[in-house]
Every structure is written in C-alpha cells, then in structure tokens.
Image (cartoon, rainbow, N blue to C red; front, top):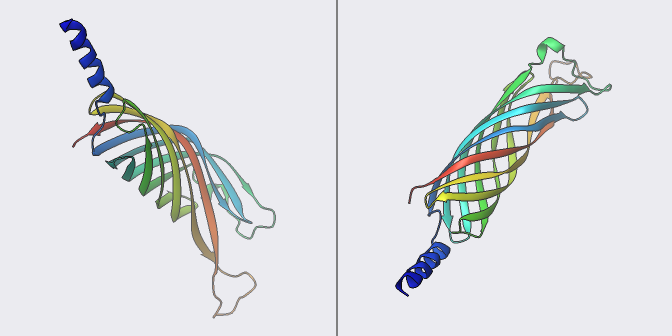
Length: 207
C-alpha cells in the first residue's frame, strides 16, 4: 500500500512540476532557409544557405513572455534579377557573394502549456537588421514572427525548435538622372528584405 501511495505521489509531482522558470537564457542556431532583398523597380537579390546564431534573455510571467535577442547571420547569394527599366546598373564585380546581418530584437510572446515539459510559445516583435555585403550596407527596421516548441530535458534545461520569419524596410538615395543642376536633390526610395529559416537551440533557466 505504501509503495502504491508513493508511486501516485511521484506521478502527481511529475504532472504538476513546473519546467522552466521566470528567466531563461536561450542560445539557438539556424541553418538553411532563404532571404530576399528587393529594390522595387531596380533589383531583386535572393540568398540561401543561411547560418544564424542568436542569444537572448526570455522573461516569462504566467502565460506571457518578453525576449531580448541579438543575432548574427550569414547568407550566400543564389541569384539576382535586374529590372529592364531600372536606373541603377551594377557590374557583377560590385555584387558580393555573401552578406552578413547583425540583428537586435524585442519580442513579445504567448505561452501555451506554460510550465509543462512540452510548450508552444508564439512570438512577435520588432527590431533592427544591419545588412552588410555589397551592394548593401543598410540598416533595416524589421518585424518578426516566430513559432517554437520547447521540450525540457530537465527542470532547468530544455531544447527549442521552431521557424523564424521576418521582414524589414530600409531606404537609399541616388542622384536624379533628369536633374543635372547644382541644386539637384537626391531621390530617396525604399528597399525591403524578407527571410525565413528554421532554428534549434537550448534554454537555460536561471531563476
């Protein structure tokens, strides 16, 4: 009888035990996926073979979470297309085969099955992406959406897998080809970038 009671208590403790605490440090790695940078009316650049590393702090309270995250990404040029009516003409030598991206984001999330061994957080957020690699050296204002699955191996250690998608906008300027006067004002136009890639990482609960 005592053994059965002990077994029931252990099972009950396993069911109600809370995996993950208020504060979590997350480190994740993403590989694959794709990224596009579009300059409307001029060019569209497609990149693949993304490799992304990110670290963040996840503050959880009840079923809500806030995340501060920094990341670094590399991507290889796959192909590019130029609009026939475009004004900007780039030589192949002026286009690098790889870009680097430095990002900082603040995300807000909704936690499903919080405190259980398996959870499903959904995040949205805003931040900045600085993309470097000719012809780009631009800062993008971006938004992101992410769906994850957390699986805790131990009470304070878990795995996370998910899909990350983001989109951003930046601006650029160039001389007006129709105005050759000394008082000519550069034209300002916008460019956009889109990316989606899988991620896998670890979670360490510290509180």
